[in-house]
Length: 104
Image (cartoon, rainbow, N blue to C red):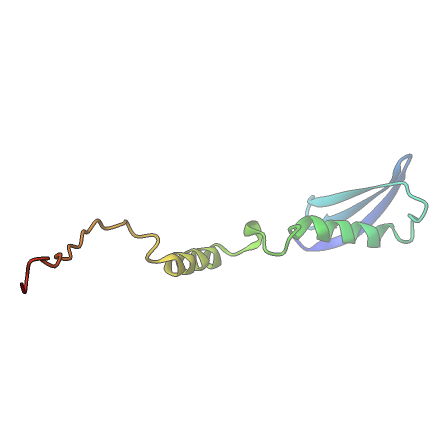
């Protein structure tokens, strides 16, 4: 959605910054009153909050990654864990005991 206009409304509790898109689409950010919040910096504060809402809390979040990249990382993890991911094979080895009477 391309943003075409920004409107700021002052309310009893602070400000509402509305980012308008094409057609009737819009995104509104509500900012609660704070001593440092003014009409002049409300748009900048709303942009910061909106950007923070879009980005995951940790840059390595799974939701932020491309599905193809997640699949590649899964395959790499499976290869790295090989042979631990393979079933255990049951084998027994027998070592013949030396005959204590041999060579007497």
